[in-house]
Length: 231
Image 1: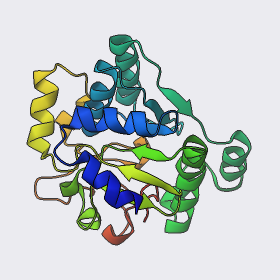
Image 2 (image 1 turned 30 degrees about the vertical axis):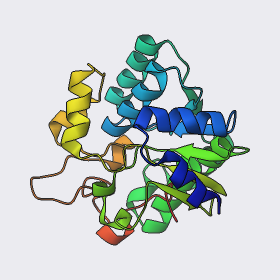
Image 3 (image 1 turned 45 degrees about the vertical axis):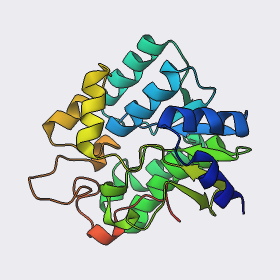
């Protein structure tokens, strides 16, 4: 099985060499998705600073924080390499907003999932189309829902292989790496935002709260996924 073979090939390699190996193996068919959070900025730095030929893209939902746009722009300035933006389909957004208003996602889980699908899931499918490997910034300790994941896995929904290069890193290791390498990061992280998504759907978390308590806080914890990393 290809996954088993890939695990063997990556075993013992450092994260940079792992990414270089995968970029060569899946040449022209490998992408990395960033939302400009702590973890994604680390992976972006690894790719751009070592000139690894992996396409970097982001989902421009139209509802991002000003701080996120700042990080996006500064990242372009620092590395002088492109970050490809994928937008939702205009007609779909217009129909949803015209029918239900700009904040319909607060009214029901179904409405929120509809908004996530239009602004994130459908653009993601376009970004991943015709690719074979998807790199992410997921870490094992980020969510209980991800405890049983591995650093390399098959994504059945998108029909490609996913690799999480900093899967085993702790949050402190991420912070230390950012500080050591002077990597630009979203200052909302310093204000209690461990996970940063669309502005209307993200708030700071309180000490002791679950990592994802600040995302879609009006919903039950068990529903707190948008579907980007569904199994």
